Length: 396
Image (cartoon, rainbow, N blue to C red; front, side, top):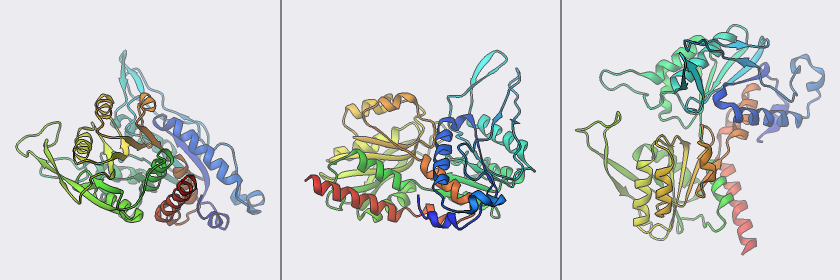
Protein backbone atom coordinates (compact mmCIF):
# COMPACT_ATOMS: atom_id res chain seq x y z
CA UNK A 1 0.00 0.00 0.00
CA UNK A 2 1.51 3.37 -1.02
CA UNK A 3 2.69 6.14 1.28
CA UNK A 4 1.73 4.68 4.68
CA UNK A 5 3.78 7.43 6.37
CA UNK A 6 1.24 10.02 5.24
CA UNK A 7 -1.54 8.04 6.91
CA UNK A 8 0.46 7.70 10.13
CA UNK A 9 0.86 11.47 10.31
CA UNK A 10 -2.76 12.45 9.67
CA UNK A 11 -6.07 12.16 11.49
CA UNK A 12 -9.21 10.50 10.16
CA UNK A 13 -12.16 12.69 9.21
CA UNK A 14 -14.42 10.51 11.33
CA UNK A 15 -14.97 6.92 12.38
CA UNK A 16 -14.82 4.70 9.31
CA UNK A 17 -17.99 2.88 8.31
CA UNK A 18 -18.84 0.75 5.27
CA UNK A 19 -22.39 0.23 4.07
CA UNK A 20 -22.27 -2.52 1.47
CA UNK A 21 -25.39 -3.00 -0.62
CA UNK A 22 -26.18 -6.67 -1.41
CA UNK A 23 -25.15 -5.96 -5.01
CA UNK A 24 -21.56 -5.56 -3.75
CA UNK A 25 -21.71 -8.13 -0.96
CA UNK A 26 -18.76 -10.50 -1.52
CA UNK A 27 -16.35 -7.77 -2.59
CA UNK A 28 -17.42 -5.62 0.34
CA UNK A 29 -16.30 -8.30 2.79
CA UNK A 30 -12.90 -8.49 1.08
CA UNK A 31 -12.49 -4.70 1.16
CA UNK A 32 -13.40 -4.71 4.85
CA UNK A 33 -10.71 -7.34 5.53
CA UNK A 34 -8.08 -5.30 3.68
CA UNK A 35 -8.93 -2.18 5.68
CA UNK A 36 -8.60 -4.09 8.95
CA UNK A 37 -5.23 -5.42 7.78
CA UNK A 38 -4.00 -1.97 6.68
CA UNK A 39 -4.84 -0.38 9.99
CA UNK A 40 -3.18 -3.04 12.07
CA UNK A 41 0.07 -2.09 10.33
CA UNK A 42 -0.22 1.60 11.26
CA UNK A 43 2.46 2.54 13.84
CA UNK A 44 1.07 5.59 15.57
CA UNK A 45 0.92 5.90 19.36
CA UNK A 46 -2.13 8.16 19.09
CA UNK A 47 -4.16 5.28 17.67
CA UNK A 48 -4.41 3.71 21.13
CA UNK A 49 -4.54 6.84 23.30
CA UNK A 50 -6.23 9.70 21.43
CA UNK A 51 -10.08 9.87 21.50
CA UNK A 52 -9.98 11.05 17.87
CA UNK A 53 -8.74 7.56 16.93
CA UNK A 54 -11.45 5.72 18.84
CA UNK A 55 -12.48 2.65 16.85
CA UNK A 56 -9.65 3.19 14.35
CA UNK A 57 -8.29 -0.36 14.49
CA UNK A 58 -11.07 -2.92 14.23
CA UNK A 59 -11.76 -6.24 12.58
CA UNK A 60 -15.05 -5.06 11.13
CA UNK A 61 -16.05 -1.66 9.68
CA UNK A 62 -19.33 -2.87 8.19
CA UNK A 63 -22.50 -1.07 9.30
CA UNK A 64 -25.44 -3.50 9.63
CA UNK A 65 -28.57 -2.55 7.72
CA UNK A 66 -31.47 -4.08 5.85
CA UNK A 67 -33.82 -3.12 3.02
CA UNK A 68 -37.09 -4.99 3.61
CA UNK A 69 -39.80 -4.94 0.94
CA UNK A 70 -43.55 -4.90 1.14
CA UNK A 71 -45.64 -7.25 -0.95
CA UNK A 72 -46.28 -4.43 -3.41
CA UNK A 73 -42.55 -4.23 -4.19
CA UNK A 74 -42.01 -0.98 -2.26
CA UNK A 75 -39.09 -0.91 0.15
CA UNK A 76 -37.40 1.01 2.96
CA UNK A 77 -33.92 1.07 4.51
CA UNK A 78 -33.25 0.37 8.18
CA UNK A 79 -29.84 1.10 9.75
CA UNK A 80 -29.19 -1.16 12.74
CA UNK A 81 -26.60 0.93 14.60
CA UNK A 82 -25.81 4.59 15.13
CA UNK A 83 -23.86 6.30 12.34
CA UNK A 84 -23.46 9.64 14.09
CA UNK A 85 -19.96 11.00 13.51
CA UNK A 86 -19.07 8.33 10.95
CA UNK A 87 -17.29 8.85 7.66
CA UNK A 88 -19.50 6.53 5.61
CA UNK A 89 -18.69 4.77 2.33
CA UNK A 90 -21.68 3.25 0.54
CA UNK A 91 -20.72 0.62 -2.04
CA UNK A 92 -23.14 -0.37 -4.80
CA UNK A 93 -22.96 -2.26 -8.09
CA UNK A 94 -25.83 -1.09 -10.26
CA UNK A 95 -25.07 -3.80 -12.85
CA UNK A 96 -25.69 -6.75 -10.52
CA UNK A 97 -28.73 -8.41 -12.07
CA UNK A 98 -28.54 -11.54 -9.90
CA UNK A 99 -30.50 -10.06 -6.96
CA UNK A 100 -34.20 -10.86 -6.86
CA UNK A 101 -37.22 -9.70 -4.86
CA UNK A 102 -40.91 -10.67 -4.75
CA UNK A 103 -43.68 -8.37 -5.92
CA UNK A 104 -47.32 -9.45 -6.05
CA UNK A 105 -46.24 -13.07 -6.01
CA UNK A 106 -43.74 -12.71 -8.85
CA UNK A 107 -39.95 -12.92 -8.62
CA UNK A 108 -38.24 -9.87 -10.14
CA UNK A 109 -34.57 -9.31 -10.87
CA UNK A 110 -33.28 -5.97 -9.63
CA UNK A 111 -32.45 -3.52 -12.39
CA UNK A 112 -29.95 -0.63 -12.22
CA UNK A 113 -32.96 1.60 -11.44
CA UNK A 114 -33.92 -0.58 -8.45
CA UNK A 115 -30.38 -0.57 -7.04
CA UNK A 116 -30.08 3.20 -7.48
CA UNK A 117 -33.36 3.60 -5.59
CA UNK A 118 -31.89 1.46 -2.76
CA UNK A 119 -28.84 3.75 -2.69
CA UNK A 120 -31.11 6.75 -2.14
CA UNK A 121 -32.92 4.88 0.63
CA UNK A 122 -29.60 4.24 2.41
CA UNK A 123 -28.58 7.91 2.15
CA UNK A 124 -32.01 8.98 3.43
CA UNK A 125 -31.63 6.71 6.44
CA UNK A 126 -28.25 8.14 7.53
CA UNK A 127 -28.48 11.74 6.29
CA UNK A 128 -27.98 14.37 8.97
CA UNK A 129 -26.13 12.00 11.28
CA UNK A 130 -22.94 10.95 9.50
CA UNK A 131 -19.96 13.32 9.24
CA UNK A 132 -19.65 12.53 5.53
CA UNK A 133 -21.53 10.35 3.07
CA UNK A 134 -19.41 9.00 0.21
CA UNK A 135 -20.72 6.85 -2.62
CA UNK A 136 -18.56 4.25 -4.37
CA UNK A 137 -20.30 3.24 -7.59
CA UNK A 138 -17.74 1.54 -9.89
CA UNK A 139 -20.01 1.48 -12.95
CA UNK A 140 -21.45 4.98 -13.29
CA UNK A 141 -25.23 4.65 -13.33
CA UNK A 142 -26.57 6.00 -16.65
CA UNK A 143 -22.97 6.89 -17.56
CA UNK A 144 -23.62 6.22 -21.23
CA UNK A 145 -26.42 8.80 -21.18
CA UNK A 146 -24.01 11.59 -20.23
CA UNK A 147 -25.01 14.18 -22.81
CA UNK A 148 -28.19 15.35 -24.48
CA UNK A 149 -28.87 15.14 -28.20
CA UNK A 150 -32.16 16.69 -29.21
CA UNK A 151 -35.21 15.77 -27.05
CA UNK A 152 -33.90 13.20 -24.58
CA UNK A 153 -33.12 12.85 -20.89
CA UNK A 154 -29.79 13.75 -19.33
CA UNK A 155 -29.76 10.91 -16.83
CA UNK A 156 -26.16 10.77 -15.52
CA UNK A 157 -26.10 14.47 -14.64
CA UNK A 158 -29.52 14.27 -12.97
CA UNK A 159 -28.39 11.26 -10.94
CA UNK A 160 -25.32 13.06 -9.60
CA UNK A 161 -27.29 16.21 -8.77
CA UNK A 162 -29.89 14.13 -6.92
CA UNK A 163 -27.25 12.42 -4.78
CA UNK A 164 -25.56 15.75 -4.06
CA UNK A 165 -28.85 17.29 -2.95
CA UNK A 166 -29.43 14.34 -0.63
CA UNK A 167 -26.15 15.02 1.19
CA UNK A 168 -23.47 13.09 -0.68
CA UNK A 169 -19.97 14.55 -0.14
CA UNK A 170 -17.85 12.57 -2.60
CA UNK A 171 -18.59 10.30 -5.52
CA UNK A 172 -16.07 7.62 -6.52
CA UNK A 173 -16.35 5.74 -9.80
CA UNK A 174 -14.09 3.84 -12.21
CA UNK A 175 -13.38 4.39 -15.89
CA UNK A 176 -16.38 6.66 -16.44
CA UNK A 177 -17.65 6.60 -20.02
CA UNK A 178 -17.19 10.38 -20.06
CA UNK A 179 -15.76 11.83 -16.81
CA UNK A 180 -16.80 15.33 -17.90
CA UNK A 181 -20.19 14.50 -16.41
CA UNK A 182 -18.57 15.68 -13.15
CA UNK A 183 -19.31 19.22 -14.39
CA UNK A 184 -22.92 18.68 -13.30
CA UNK A 185 -21.79 18.84 -9.63
CA UNK A 186 -18.85 21.29 -9.77
CA UNK A 187 -18.75 21.95 -6.02
CA UNK A 188 -18.85 18.29 -4.97
CA UNK A 189 -16.13 15.65 -5.04
CA UNK A 190 -15.96 13.36 -8.07
CA UNK A 191 -13.06 10.91 -8.43
CA UNK A 192 -12.62 8.71 -11.47
CA UNK A 193 -10.07 5.91 -11.11
CA UNK A 194 -8.58 3.73 -13.83
CA UNK A 195 -7.35 0.08 -13.71
CA UNK A 196 -4.33 -0.09 -16.10
CA UNK A 197 -2.00 -1.31 -13.35
CA UNK A 198 -4.35 -4.19 -12.50
CA UNK A 199 -4.57 -5.10 -16.20
CA UNK A 200 -0.84 -5.37 -16.77
CA UNK A 201 -0.32 -7.13 -13.43
CA UNK A 202 -2.98 -9.75 -14.27
CA UNK A 203 -1.59 -10.26 -17.77
CA UNK A 204 2.04 -10.64 -16.65
CA UNK A 205 1.02 -12.96 -13.81
CA UNK A 206 -0.77 -15.35 -16.17
CA UNK A 207 1.47 -15.22 -19.26
CA UNK A 208 5.08 -16.37 -18.98
CA UNK A 209 6.50 -15.62 -22.44
CA UNK A 210 5.54 -12.01 -23.15
CA UNK A 211 8.10 -9.59 -24.59
CA UNK A 212 6.86 -6.11 -23.77
CA UNK A 213 8.48 -3.84 -26.34
CA UNK A 214 7.45 -2.10 -29.55
CA UNK A 215 8.82 -4.90 -31.73
CA UNK A 216 6.70 -7.61 -30.12
CA UNK A 217 3.58 -5.96 -28.70
CA UNK A 218 1.09 -3.25 -29.68
CA UNK A 219 -1.87 -1.67 -27.85
CA UNK A 220 -5.13 -1.26 -29.80
CA UNK A 221 -8.20 0.85 -29.12
CA UNK A 222 -11.39 -0.76 -30.48
CA UNK A 223 -12.84 2.68 -31.27
CA UNK A 224 -11.98 6.36 -31.14
CA UNK A 225 -13.61 6.75 -27.70
CA UNK A 226 -11.06 4.44 -26.04
CA UNK A 227 -7.97 6.05 -27.61
CA UNK A 228 -6.94 7.96 -24.47
CA UNK A 229 -6.86 4.73 -22.44
CA UNK A 230 -4.83 2.94 -25.11
CA UNK A 231 -2.35 5.79 -25.54
CA UNK A 232 -1.66 5.97 -21.80
CA UNK A 233 -1.22 2.20 -21.52
CA UNK A 234 1.07 2.12 -24.56
CA UNK A 235 3.19 5.12 -23.52
CA UNK A 236 3.84 3.78 -20.03
CA UNK A 237 4.96 0.42 -21.43
CA UNK A 238 6.88 1.91 -24.37
CA UNK A 239 4.61 0.43 -27.05
CA UNK A 240 2.98 1.66 -30.24
CA UNK A 241 -0.77 2.03 -30.55
CA UNK A 242 -3.51 1.85 -33.16
CA UNK A 243 -7.28 2.13 -33.33
CA UNK A 244 -10.38 0.98 -35.15
CA UNK A 245 -12.89 3.37 -36.63
CA UNK A 246 -16.50 2.25 -36.30
CA UNK A 247 -18.41 2.86 -39.52
CA UNK A 248 -22.10 3.08 -38.59
CA UNK A 249 -25.38 3.05 -40.49
CA UNK A 250 -27.02 6.28 -39.37
CA UNK A 251 -30.25 5.47 -41.26
CA UNK A 252 -31.17 2.79 -38.67
CA UNK A 253 -31.47 2.48 -34.91
CA UNK A 254 -31.11 -0.97 -33.32
CA UNK A 255 -31.33 -1.37 -29.52
CA UNK A 256 -31.09 2.39 -29.08
CA UNK A 257 -28.02 2.98 -31.26
CA UNK A 258 -26.90 3.08 -34.88
CA UNK A 259 -25.63 -0.37 -35.94
CA UNK A 260 -21.95 -0.82 -36.84
CA UNK A 261 -21.38 -1.64 -40.50
CA UNK A 262 -17.63 -2.29 -40.31
CA UNK A 263 -14.48 -1.70 -38.23
CA UNK A 264 -11.69 0.06 -40.15
CA UNK A 265 -8.15 -0.28 -38.73
CA UNK A 266 -5.82 2.71 -38.41
CA UNK A 267 -2.28 1.89 -37.32
CA UNK A 268 1.05 0.22 -38.05
CA UNK A 269 1.71 -3.34 -39.11
CA UNK A 270 0.81 -5.85 -36.38
CA UNK A 271 2.09 -8.95 -38.17
CA UNK A 272 3.29 -11.58 -35.64
CA UNK A 273 2.88 -9.18 -32.69
CA UNK A 274 0.95 -9.70 -29.45
CA UNK A 275 -1.98 -7.29 -29.31
CA UNK A 276 -3.59 -5.82 -26.20
CA UNK A 277 -7.07 -4.35 -26.72
CA UNK A 278 -8.09 -1.76 -24.10
CA UNK A 279 -11.69 -0.62 -23.58
CA UNK A 280 -13.99 0.47 -20.80
CA UNK A 281 -16.69 -2.17 -21.16
CA UNK A 282 -18.02 -5.22 -22.91
CA UNK A 283 -21.78 -5.00 -23.30
CA UNK A 284 -22.97 -7.76 -25.61
CA UNK A 285 -19.44 -8.29 -26.93
CA UNK A 286 -20.16 -8.24 -30.66
CA UNK A 287 -17.89 -5.27 -31.43
CA UNK A 288 -15.01 -6.61 -29.35
CA UNK A 289 -15.15 -10.04 -31.00
CA UNK A 290 -15.31 -8.49 -34.47
CA UNK A 291 -12.27 -6.36 -33.62
CA UNK A 292 -10.38 -9.42 -32.35
CA UNK A 293 -11.29 -11.41 -35.44
CA UNK A 294 -9.92 -8.72 -37.75
CA UNK A 295 -6.69 -8.52 -35.75
CA UNK A 296 -6.17 -12.28 -36.08
CA UNK A 297 -6.86 -12.01 -39.82
CA UNK A 298 -4.09 -9.38 -39.92
CA UNK A 299 -1.80 -12.10 -38.50
CA UNK A 300 -1.63 -10.92 -34.89
CA UNK A 301 0.22 -13.53 -32.82
CA UNK A 302 -2.05 -13.35 -29.78
CA UNK A 303 -4.94 -11.08 -28.80
CA UNK A 304 -5.48 -10.08 -25.18
CA UNK A 305 -8.72 -8.24 -24.36
CA UNK A 306 -8.61 -5.91 -21.34
CA UNK A 307 -11.87 -4.29 -20.27
CA UNK A 308 -12.90 -2.61 -17.04
CA UNK A 309 -16.49 -3.82 -17.01
CA UNK A 310 -17.55 -7.19 -18.38
CA UNK A 311 -21.33 -6.93 -18.56
CA UNK A 312 -21.92 -9.84 -20.99
CA UNK A 313 -25.52 -8.78 -21.58
CA UNK A 314 -26.09 -11.63 -24.05
CA UNK A 315 -24.23 -14.31 -22.11
CA UNK A 316 -20.89 -16.03 -22.74
CA UNK A 317 -21.80 -18.22 -25.70
CA UNK A 318 -20.52 -15.66 -28.20
CA UNK A 319 -17.14 -15.52 -26.42
CA UNK A 320 -16.91 -19.30 -26.10
CA UNK A 321 -17.39 -19.66 -29.85
CA UNK A 322 -14.93 -16.87 -30.63
CA UNK A 323 -12.29 -18.47 -28.38
CA UNK A 324 -12.76 -21.86 -30.04
CA UNK A 325 -12.26 -20.18 -33.43
CA UNK A 326 -9.05 -18.56 -32.16
CA UNK A 327 -10.22 -14.95 -32.40
CA UNK A 328 -8.71 -14.07 -29.00
CA UNK A 329 -6.47 -15.71 -26.41
CA UNK A 330 -7.24 -14.06 -23.06
CA UNK A 331 -10.05 -11.93 -21.66
CA UNK A 332 -9.13 -9.80 -18.63
CA UNK A 333 -11.83 -7.90 -16.81
CA UNK A 334 -12.13 -6.46 -13.32
CA UNK A 335 -14.46 -7.62 -10.57
CA UNK A 336 -15.87 -4.10 -10.17
CA UNK A 337 -19.23 -5.32 -11.47
CA UNK A 338 -21.09 -8.59 -11.18
CA UNK A 339 -19.61 -11.43 -13.20
CA UNK A 340 -21.59 -14.59 -14.01
CA UNK A 341 -20.20 -17.45 -11.86
CA UNK A 342 -19.65 -19.67 -14.90
CA UNK A 343 -17.06 -17.29 -16.35
CA UNK A 344 -14.52 -18.49 -13.77
CA UNK A 345 -14.55 -21.91 -15.46
CA UNK A 346 -13.58 -20.47 -18.84
CA UNK A 347 -9.96 -21.16 -19.86
CA UNK A 348 -9.63 -17.71 -21.42
CA UNK A 349 -10.78 -15.65 -18.43
CA UNK A 350 -8.50 -13.70 -16.06
CA UNK A 351 -9.89 -11.58 -13.22
CA UNK A 352 -8.22 -8.29 -12.32
CA UNK A 353 -9.00 -7.96 -8.62
CA UNK A 354 -9.78 -4.38 -7.54
CA UNK A 355 -10.69 -4.94 -3.87
CA UNK A 356 -7.31 -3.97 -2.42
CA UNK A 357 -7.24 -0.86 -4.60
CA UNK A 358 -10.70 0.21 -3.39
CA UNK A 359 -9.63 -0.37 0.22
CA UNK A 360 -6.62 1.92 -0.35
CA UNK A 361 -8.88 4.60 -1.81
CA UNK A 362 -11.18 4.44 1.21
CA UNK A 363 -8.26 4.54 3.66
CA UNK A 364 -6.71 7.65 2.11
CA UNK A 365 -10.07 9.40 1.75
CA UNK A 366 -10.89 8.73 5.38
CA UNK A 367 -7.65 10.58 6.27
CA UNK A 368 -8.50 13.38 3.82
CA UNK A 369 -5.18 12.68 2.11
CA UNK A 370 -4.31 13.41 -1.51
CA UNK A 371 -5.74 10.96 -4.02
CA UNK A 372 -2.45 11.24 -5.92
CA UNK A 373 -1.28 8.50 -3.55
CA UNK A 374 -3.53 5.99 -5.30
CA UNK A 375 -4.23 7.59 -8.69
CA UNK A 376 -0.72 7.49 -10.17
CA UNK A 377 -0.31 4.08 -11.82
CA UNK A 378 2.83 4.84 -13.82
CA UNK A 379 5.47 3.90 -11.23
CA UNK A 380 3.63 0.75 -10.21
CA UNK A 381 3.26 -0.36 -13.84
CA UNK A 382 6.99 0.20 -14.39
CA UNK A 383 7.78 -1.77 -11.23
CA UNK A 384 5.64 -4.81 -12.11
CA UNK A 385 7.08 -4.86 -15.64
CA UNK A 386 10.65 -4.66 -14.33
CA UNK A 387 10.02 -7.52 -11.91
CA UNK A 388 8.51 -9.59 -14.72
CA UNK A 389 11.49 -9.00 -17.01
CA UNK A 390 13.95 -9.87 -14.24
CA UNK A 391 12.08 -13.08 -13.43
CA UNK A 392 11.89 -14.01 -17.10
CA UNK A 393 15.60 -13.37 -17.63
CA UNK A 394 16.45 -15.62 -14.67
CA UNK A 395 14.23 -18.41 -16.08
CA UNK A 396 15.87 -18.10 -19.49
